[in-house]
Image 1 (cartoon, rainbow, N blue to C red):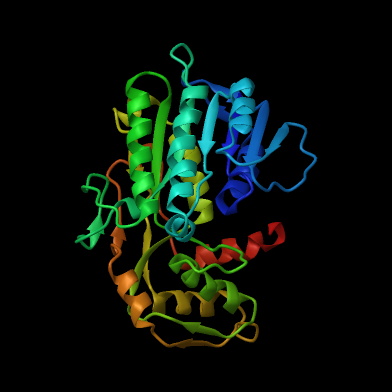
Image 2 (image 1 turned 180 degrees about the vertical axis):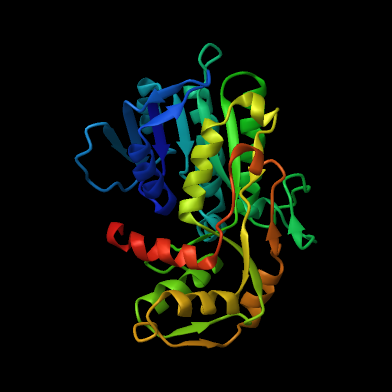
Length: 323
């Protein structure tokens, strides 16, 4: 099989590439296990490597020349992770629309095929939901995104579902909650403010938590994200029963739970000092998020949340050597 990964140099993309090269085989569109023969990595920045199965295109996914090279490569499966994220999309809405929506439309048109439709796996986001939310959000809640990024993800889900209906691709979207722990450098995003609690404390730096200790948030490890993306790729269309987008179930934890897990997992002599100083603006943003993120369909296709926050911390520490 020939596997395309866009956004391959990013936080999730780099983890996904390591996992698929280690796995060695995927389930094709006929439900047959096949060896991964070639992997094409696309991103504006890509680390070097010596893996013989890997090819690289360093460039912007919205660049016509990059898209033409992808089309010539003819992938059997696509993991489309390339995107402009929340803050960047808010600051450059026109460019974000071009990258997040227009480039996706072009990619679907170029790799789609009525005779051999590729599987097309897309990480969507909890950001497609917004407004007055229930405490627990499931797959079927009506979407009311409150950011440009969330709007683009919602549009993308519909585009993939429509191309699937037309028989051009087998589109599958997996909506992600807060993904932890980004190794840095720090960003201004709200989710990275949460990640920094773990990142800094593990590094022995003192941490000021900008949220109340009782504030609860839905989180998932990057390992669970990668496992979910691979699982939704490999499941048969019959088992999905017409569903093209599902939530990745989250582990709901309080900030106090996060701190307690850190203290149980990391040597106290090495852990940075952790104090709470809630920021009212940040607290208002986080309180608008759902507290629970669940899916009725996920368990049926082998997708689950992390079992504990300790496992998220342990995975982060184990992965520091790959950063």
